Image (spheres, helix red, strand yellow):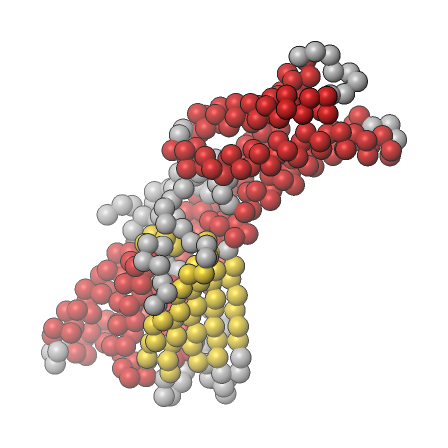
Amino acid sequence: MSSINQIITPTLLPNFRNLGTVLRTILLVNAIALFVALTQADTFSDLLQQLLYGSALLQPVLLASLLLLYALNPLFAKLAYWQSTTAIVGLIALVTFGLDIMGGELFASQNDIGAFRYIRHMLESAIVILLLLSYFRWRALALSPAKHAARLQALQARIRPHFLFNSINAVLAIVRADPKRAETALEDMSDLFRMAMSEPHELVELSKEIELARQYLALEQLRLGERLQVQWNTDKMPADALIPPLVLQPLLENAVYHGIEPLTDGGIIEVRIYREGSELHLQVGNPISATGLAHNKGHKMALSNIRERLSLLFDVEADYQVEQGADYYSVHILIPYVTEVS
């Protein structure tokens, strides 16, 4: 078993297929262009003229570069960081040179003489992309290394002690009457805690997450019996999807602990997993006590941890919504449909 103390090597190169990366790139590039125009302008009208002139070449280069980076993102992910950086800088410089030639005099200023215009524009593009890559490198270093691993491990340690003790007591209660069932329960416990203590990875197979969730629910049903019912709606679930590890199990644990346990007659936990286009949806709903008799509501570290991890992994492409009524609680997670680690 891999040690839980190992630290994930941060991905320093940004994912150019991530919406957050694209939005940040567009905003930062235009912010740099505005700053340069401000340093060169003497009047407000001069500033507008500088922005108009700069945007004539900037926007086509920006759009073409983003499209190329999107298409070549899997290739860059396989290269070493310095190789990817060199390739990206060279690619953007070539895109700038090609569009500059195609634009002819449209992109030339009064101060441009001969070939210096092309060299200047290529150097400006190279400097801007190096600044952007430096920003994304800093951001990855700030978010991904020890803090990222610690947050993931914190969630993995979030299987509550009461669950362990209750499961052991439930197994002891049936070990004589039904030894085969007790053996199966112990195997489920072993798999569950092996997953919790294993080296954290960013994404795992959805089918394995569901298998782990079923093992957890089987242990809870061992002590709750008919009070705990689960309705799985996975007909539209993509079998090849990858999701962050230990996302589904904490949601189910909260549904059992805060929803089913306080209810005398128990209830039904509804699980929906489906795909819509490029989005994967995970929904977990459960009944809650209408009288307000429930466990401590302050125990929500796991849910906060999930939100934080989704933000780290998918940026603005992930969404986490909670809907609560008088007798119903539902969590809806939306993440990109991913089939391979980019």
